[in-house]
Image (cartoon, rainbow over the protein chains, first blue to last red):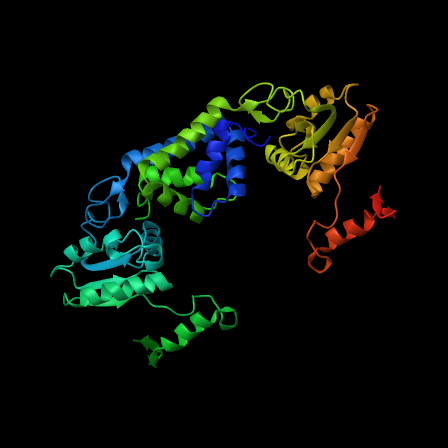
Amino acid sequence: MNGNLKTQSLSRLIEELARMPGVGDKTAERLALHLLRVPKEEALGLARAIEDVRANVRACSQCCNVSETDPCAICSDPGRDRSLLCVVEQPSDLWAIEKSGSFNGLYHVLMGRIAPVEGVGPEHLTVGKLMDRVNDGVREVILATNPTMEGDGTALHLEKRLEARGVTVTRIARGLPSGGSLPYASRAVVADAIAGRRELHGGRARP
Amino acid sequence: MNGNLKTQSLSRLIEELARMPGVGDKTAERLALHLLRVPKEEALGLARAIEDVRANVRACSQCCNVSETDPCAICSDPGRDRSLLCVVEQPSDLWAIEKSGSFNGLYHVLMGRIAPVEGVGPEHLTVGKLMDRVNDGVREVILATNPTMEGDGTALHLEKRLEARGVTVTRIARGLPSGGSLPYASRAVVADAIAGRRELHGGRARP
């Protein structure tokens, strides 16, 4: 009785939606019904946006970020400091840093992080390309992988390989988030804040 | 600097994804990057599934459920009891009842619920069609809208209009969920369980 209840097209749409990360069967059902309910143009707009992205967006041959041009807008910007390289896991990490307006160097997007449990090794990422980019023009490599187990592991792996190149390797700071408070912070965050404390000299923090 | 960072196609895909219910900007970013990363066929599979659904799926002219045939598989099934009509908000509610295997009548899908705050009145739902269907062949209408404020309000509205037709109108039971326990139930659930209690006769509950 339950077999062709949802109609073939609808079942397939629910299946396809449920392949996306964080989308369970119930959410997929809800999204599929939403796509059925909205004006046809809105639903087809999403379909076309997916097709366009797959047709037009590729990896920048320099930083490996997603881009419609090669090199990407950042790599081809003459105003950026080419001696600074910020290594991130994903394009969304790069977007977050760009949004903060706190960095004016170039990026390198790993397109993931080393995760032995999931079978992701450095050979599945753009690590080889990163090593090729680190030449004598690069003064500092900032490891901006996330402060998670995998992100830290990835940073450790890169640090070892990069130090042999004689380049300064730094890691983004960890501690209490700005606006946060000690009673609400997790033990790991508090431990980072204590371990990473800085001496104050004349009212100014110094590493 | 932030303007064309995400590329035109990618920004549009993120926007289109974020139009879906429960999908915020961050989730949309994550889904868009997922669709960029997976094999091209998987991403295009989703796009085609959306197009197919919009091309093939329509409303059953009898019960208003989504269907590729008209009448739908349930309405055209000669084995179903045509004197019983179960009114639900959404196709997903119908799917849940079919999955339980506890109902063998016909359905009527409202395609929403009355929600004055959102400006949704009975005229935006398939209420008119429901009234047309309730003829002398129908013995009982089960109101299976959800036990929420809007679902209850919708049931109340339908009850008033249906009772004038001389048809038996029932409401699905509410109380403690099977497998649940009183200490973990909300006050509203406990109140429903008490208010809806039934007298036991020879060990069997009777309304």
